[in-house]
View: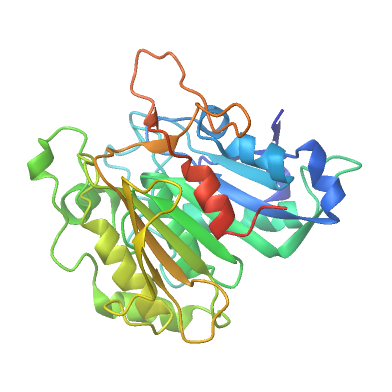
Length: 342
């Protein structure tokens, strides 16, 4: 079972974030285990998302440690707080866009800094138990759904020296907005409007600000590698964001977005997944990959039909879970891309 990461072991940066840590039985056998940071979406909680999304199944199968940051649901958090008084989020979303409200140098959202501090704590052995495994600081990855993917992208950009890679499910580009109040209209996000009205602004982000982010980052060639997964029937996040994210991360690596090295259908799901990969000549792995899931909405895709390779579960709920069995395991796809498999 996941356990609480002790609050005094990391710098919460004045945020409402907390975290759980999951250490599967097989982690010690790996010598140094990889670490995955998993960020839930809006209206979700960290533990349930971990259990239902397929990521617990992947951790158990492959023996990597999972860090599960959690946002606090607070209906009053957006009511005139001006940013510094913010405490949580009305829908439990990570506040990925709050750069204007950030007191940190470089305008890094304070929640991103808090999560980076949590990563440092786990890498140093906190939350792993008395006989816990060692964590490989060179194999730290981050993934998330929706607002969690938005925060994952921020972490990859602002802390690229920390992360080897990331997987963004139904995410939005870094700096598509600089406050959560403006993110819905600028980043093409909606839980209220009709599907045709969910549109991101043209271009997706401020290229000048993105250039500054790249210049701040201290990253080695080919790191972090980024997987972008987007359903084409998403009515909550404009699917066009997948293009903007692809443009953003190919630019990060100095690659051409119009020159993919892999064009085709995902072999494990030939009818519904179309992929593009990007890497320089001679690379032994893709640096950026985009997978479009035809006809899939705003969900974390799971596959419960193969008992030999479990991937998530469908939970009976009165509210929308944003997890759906579509016969395709997004967590398995990402685990392979992020090289988390044994």
